[in-house]
Length: 102
Image 1: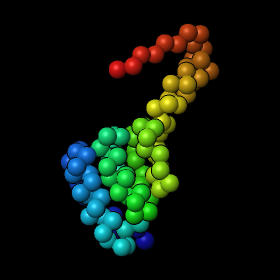
Image 2 (image 1 turned 30 degrees about the vertical axis):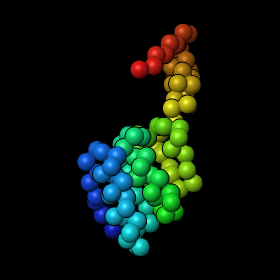
Image 3 (image 1 turned 90 degrees about the vertical axis):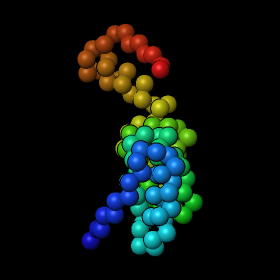
Image 4 (image 1 turned 135 degrees about the vertical axis):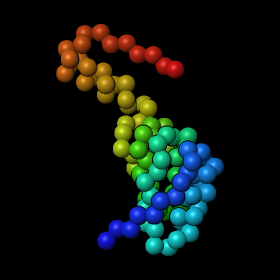
């Protein structure tokens, strides 16, 4: 049986870290599904890692967020360009592909 506990990070890194501290303090909490976005997830992820709690981030692409107990639902920043270039060429027959960085 799985029990869900919701803690609001308010979309802020500091609040996310406080939420993580609240959860790791509960011995029966074994894992967390973190918020969207690398900069918001990172402080909490570091806490989960320290306490050896599994943390899954969705929409978390930063390469620096690569830990033993961290899992993501999407590719890292260093692999997304090559992945989508391959998809564009194989699925859509694209011959030229350009990219830009914000």
